Amino acid sequence: MFKRILIANRGEIAVRIIRVCQDLDIESVAVYSEADRDALHVKYADYAYPIGPPPSVQSYLAIDRIIDVAKKTRAEAIHPGYGFLAENGEFARRCQESGIVFIGPSPEVIEQMGDKVRARAIMKAVGIPVVPGSDGVLNSEEEVTRVAATIGYPFMLKAVAGGGGKGLRLVRSPREIPSAYRAVRSEAASSFGDSRLYIERYVERPRHVEVQILADQYGKVVHLYDRECSIQRRHQKIIEECPGPALDYKLRRQIGRIAIQGARAVRYVGVGTLEFLLDRAKNFYFLEMNTRLQVEHAVTERVVGIDLVKAQIEVAAGAYLPWRQRHISPTGHAIECRIYAEDPENDFMPCPGKIEGLRLPEGVGVRNDCGVYEGAEVPIYYDPMIAKLIIWGENRVEAILRMRRALREYQVRGIKTNIPFHQWILRHPRFMTGDFNTAFIDDEYRFLRKGELYPHKDIALASAAIAALQREQERALRLLEKGAAEKSNWREAGRRVSLRSVPVSSGRGRKV
Image 1 (cartoon, one colour):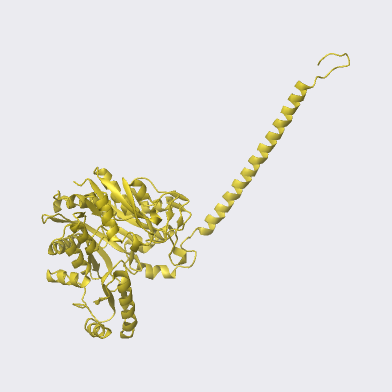
Image 2 (tube, helix red, strand yellow):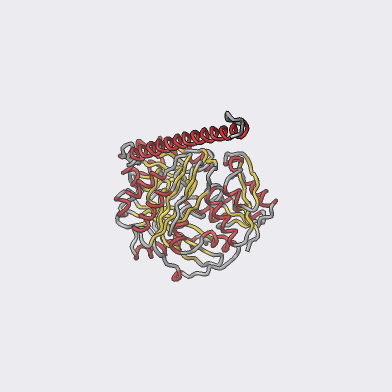
């Protein structure tokens, strides 16, 4: 086992990894930008080193600086978390060349699966269904138009190196191709340094289902069942749950076997996720493979009882997987809400600032993966996710009701968060019944009138005003009582002093 690991990340995932290191008696090394000098992961780590200014390109994406810190601290391995350098083949290769273990798959696998066109070709070759689309890169608007004529409209124009909801556009007619082509090409070049594009037929109102896999260095692969990730806004996941309510027993086993087949096709090692689109007829299509830990890994952990970060570290250290597929079964249901520092009533604009008050929910089945604390500053430079709330229940209904209770307890003062948005989703009849797809928020939220996100906002404001008035009245009364008491005490003290210090004589000349 490793003695020291560097965590090349920040926020709640860095805290999560540091805690696992502590559980395994491994020393942890944190890195931080100038904006994160007082961040929670810096406080928790055994060692912490600055790596540059706030912009991520000068700090958390600066490969040379991170490798230098790893060498300086004699870290034997680097855990990339998710985001930043987690799926960067060059970073994984530099780690290898420096004699440092990269906790993740090989650079070759990262690059294969990061190239969406190559990933489609590999999966198609082993019999895994993929969404119909172009077989290679498209280099002009004319090529896009020609291929679109064969697969039909609408289609998705995508960046080959895309991910995280960036580098894609929905195209519904030929006249939209020129503007979409320019927009996606520009976004792909700026976000990924790769302007190559391809297209896929648009699957109308699909469900987004993914399968968690885990593989060791000796060819053993297991799946840890599926997750439902269809509640999305602008292609970004917001709520995830495990197991997915859309799959029955037969389909769940089938998609699990397909995921294992896909992982073996690329000789995968470590924790990974295969993502699929599920259409209305229950046909599923391979979408992409994420060669890293997912944000939503916690719901899988809660349901199958396996610590995925711990497994990642052990596999990277050369351990065998101790489980066979028949040993792994889901128990109960788990839901995760991503807590963002953003304003749902102002087009979800980020809300950086100081957290003046923080109260996390507690109770049976409640887990908080939090990257902030009361008094912490939420910087504007990074993703606005500050925490994840994970709830487990014996079944989906219990998990939903428990999540609704936990969200009511969750209090963040000083900045705005999307907690009211989560509460609205958790109360929605379509979510309660499991009747939703990736278009759920587009379908339902755009018709929400102002103020409906906070259905009891007026009552709450009036109650708060009354409570504040009562507190002020009580405070004023206490001050009056205190003043009166002080005045009375001083008068009495003065009277006692005058009686003691000034003799009073009677007419007969003796002291009274």
